[in-house]
Image (cartoon, rainbow, N blue to C red; front, side, top):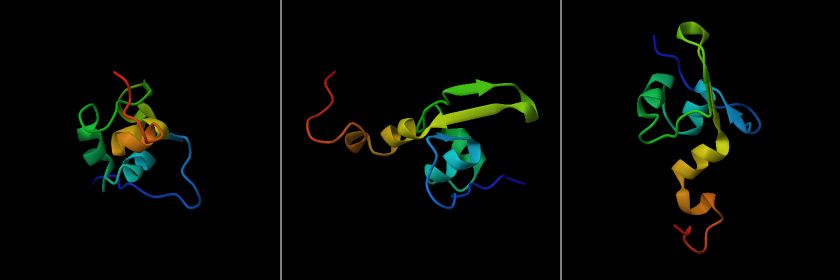
Length: 81
């Protein structure tokens, strides 16, 4: 059974584990989110362990950049290359 993403009550934390990152990104399941990590979604900034002991965490700000790159840097002028 796929682990569902869930939206927390209150506000979003700055660091998001699998379920919260998936929900924040608008994915219905963690598996759907993980399958798009590295292409649509950024890689986690922390990734340790293997199997059931695997720990991954994303910065909310990194997901914000993927969701809306223009507003993530403050809008206005384009980001210099």
